[in-house]
Each structure stands twice: as structure tokens, then as C-alpha cells.
Amino acid sequence: MQPFTVLTGVAAPLRIINVDTDMIIPKNYLKTIKRTGLGTGLFAEMRFTPEGAEIPEFVLNQPAYRKAQILVAGDNFGCGSSREHAPWALLDYGIRCVISTSFADIFYNNCFKNGILPIVVTPSELEALFEDAERGANATITVDLESQEIRGPDGGVIRFEIDPFRKHCLMNGLDDIGLTLEKAPAIETFEQKMAERPWA
Image (cartoon, rainbow, N blue to C red; front, side, top):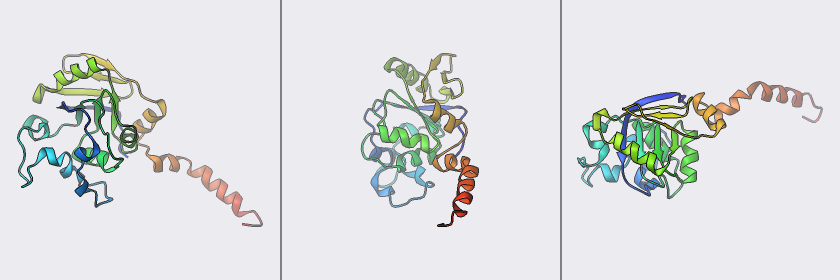
């Protein structure tokens, strides 16, 4: 998993509340268990017409936001069914950080397991970030995980809270497999001791 330390990038404003996982990645994209290639399906029903043409009004189709790495979203982001494809699609598109006032629990947990930083802010802080993000190409925001700060284009700073263990995992690029591999020497020692038992 790619470590997350400091991210500076364009922030795309998505002023929609209750964005569920089916909106993030529609069900017809769930036929794969691969984590790559899902970026094309991200917000597909909002990004494209049924014929496959881009919908110009959708934020990620606008030139200034096509390479957005940060998403500023409305309340209760990631609600609905518990599909891991949702963070996979965000990550494959290039989004490493989602900022909102609240997240669905399963989506929130899945983000950390896939290298995405979900940040919870207050409603007033979210509004300030929306205003920053709506500047188009000038909507560059820095997210500093070490200092737990979001820095806006005018120098404004918003502090955020994060669980220390999750922070450690993100900063060191550790998913569940990576955490297990950190214990490899201890596991190997245990297995060697067990192999010496007469009943093994």
C-alpha cells in the first residue's frame, strides 16, 4: 500500500449529501475482484450518459478537476451497501483523500485499508473547504497527515483528528497484510518451536 504523508493537490467539490456506494461505483462494475481499472466506473451514472458521453456539468468532467486527488463531499459520504469496490474506484481514479462531516462506518474503515485518508471536519470547516475547492484550477489544498492539518490556498489551516494506529498504518503504507508481515520473525520463531513438539 502506498504510504500517505503529505498530499498537495486539486480538491474537487461534490456538494451532494448521502452519496452511497452505488453512486460511487455502480453495481455493474462489481464483477471483478481486481483493484485496478475501476476508476473508469467512478461516479459513472453521474459522469456519463447511458450512451457513454460525458456529462459536462459533473465536477470530475470539468477541466480544472479531472486530476483531482482530494474530494470535498457532503454529509454521510459512503453510505449504503458495504462494497470495497468504492474505495478501490476512488483510489484507481487518483483520489487519496476524502473530506466530509461524516462517513458511513464500513466505508470509513475500508478507506484506511486501501490507502485513502477520510477526514471528518465540522460543518463550518467543510463550507470553508467547499469555497476553496470551488476555485477551479486554483483549488490546491495540502493535507499533512503528520501534523494533522489541512492547509488552504490562502494559508488557512484546519486541524483534524485521527486514530493514532490508523495514522501509523497510513504513514507507513501498512494494510492488514503489511501489519502481519511486520510480525514475520515472531511468527517464524513460533512455527519453529511448534515443529519441535513431539506431536507436531
